[in-house]
Image (tube, rainbow, N blue to C red):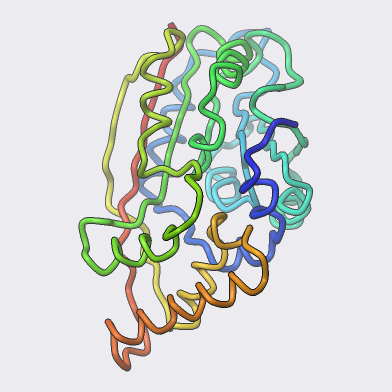
Length: 259
């Protein structure tokens, strides 16, 4: 399985990730579910939905109840995350695979969902595979919970996490957007910037959230401890003695059609 090194080493602790990452708003879940319901079906469709990079099931368990009588396949390349996904989403069919090697037949999927992950595999090989398994009327949903970097303290916090670290795929770089825009197989159909999820907690909670970020989770133990302490001190300096710190988010949804 061809995965980025930070994904291999940073996405192993399913429990840490699942407990310290935000969920998704009703609005974005309902928006995607409605569009999936409206996609015309064919006899050769095997799955109504293929979720790539499903992680620990943060999005899976939110949308699954909305899709009555729909066949759903959640895929994830990390063994650690897949185990958590299976615990969190009993009854949902899962498979271990990467986006560049999807073990499904041509034109067999109505919708492909990538929640918080497309930046990890926005390669021609993966997009070829996604296009191959999607039916002609299918849709590709890319969505992210994105910390609002227009807020100064949030932007500084993210810079602290990435300081002196090798470049790693991430949403805010928008490199993934350039990749799909230069790919001839998909066309952007809809772009929505929606209100973000409610997320926050104590200083300790936000330090754990920072530790779940791949660039930090993949660090050696001593480096991880140093960056965690830097994050802790920064949050204390900015927010003083607040017991609950609200982190501003926005939800970005990109809907592509197959061409």
